[in-house]
Length: 291
Image 1: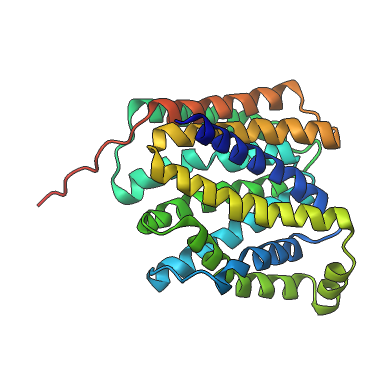
Image 2: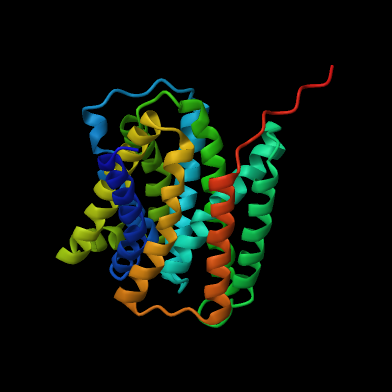
């Protein structure tokens, strides 16, 4: 990769890693539903200038609902005490689920390296499970674990939009996500509470929201899509391994989050498993259909 593009890939990893810190900070003044409603309302603004990508409505609805579920569950987990740094590691385990679901649903045969990585990452997640109950509940952990599952399913749907510009795609997906997010906010918070939260944001939280929407989503995915168009996935995707390290390190510095030996070891093992999958695993072609 060119030095400038390497710098851009590092910038995206930094933006996405810090996004978990900004989320926790914004949750001090906003509920998870209102936070995500405002985030995607801002992200959807480019729809006023960008053309709507040509995708089947089932793909639009599927990706939008999965996106809503992913961000609501991960932000709800953080609001319930799941450390932002740990959440960053959990969300990045989507690579494990993506490979597994592609094998089951699409017939893609995982390589030995991918199977090894899945096994290593699963062991790390199991070690993290043994630390549940000390600073957050089993329910909070279980709900947070559904975020990478939704992420994985959306990855499979996104394959049908490979030729669509990322900026256009995520702007319109964000727009399609607004109705279910507005409904969720109305049901859980109510109109008066939503209005109160939106009209009493501190400057710091407003800056965090702009970083999440404009930085993490709009700019981050635009750069990432540009890099994936210019280089192979094997050259670009490994930079995503930096996200959990940045998220965990930044949350430790900003919020004083600490991880016990068992949890820290589990987090490192998860990232090691992801590294094996991303750096050494290349998917085999699907099995031929019989008959």
